[in-house]
Length: 346
Image (tube, rainbow, N blue to C red; front, top):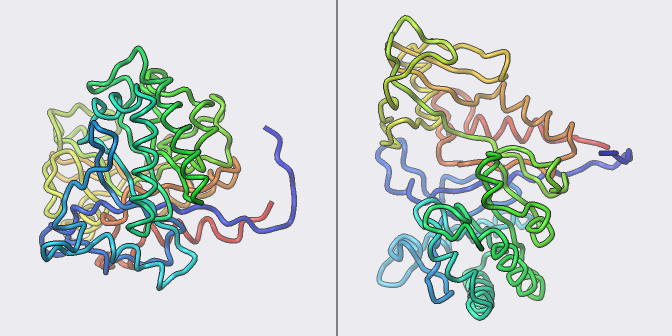
């Protein structure tokens, strides 16, 4: 892939997902709109709304999202961040893991329902103040989807969305899985790339026909944790007996937010190690083990983004960064990503 050399500075995307359920977390884990720094992201994505089988948007948490019936009005507060930083773009994500595939598959199979969804989603964005839609159909052809038609119907769905959204000056993006076995089932990569302004990806697809300038490389603000079978065997590939213990904020086994990890390193004296092959850290204490990203590995990923001419980065998700600065700088990972992607010239 040839690169054209020029001397102008490139502004990379820093696309930040906000998992709104973090509003309900306890203590220092609670993360609401007022915790967001609107200058650390170029795009903020509100996760999630759902989809009805009749091709309309579904509000999943009315009390949190809306202001009706004494609700918190989180969507309005989220979009009001653009009053603080007018350069910020906001999008709303439709779908996610809990929404599965069945409703998306039903809508995507019907030309009438596709058009209805395109119009309803665009009107919803305009009414609520979003600059666009992020399609998080996880995953076409899987999880109660139809593997015989979903892959190509996803392209048709995005085509109809793109036409409606372009007419209204709205952005259209998608979050997609990068694992080769999953991608082969779910995506016509060159087909979906045609209709999207950019693609939020957990790895890169350059060899499969996705243009580099549309790809945002996924950066994880969390780690995967395991319970070791043998406390004396704690390196990469050590046998595990199951997921790691749940953290004090996220309450999910096998998962720790970076904020939970850095506090364990600082206050519980976990052992910090570096894997030279994968260029990422891992940590352990007794029978608990976690692999994750830190400031050093995030810097390496920023360099990777620049080296391959990618559009920028995608962050999942800002509410598990060290947003209180308990371990050092506030928003340590997000700040590192900003520093790593600035002053890039080609």
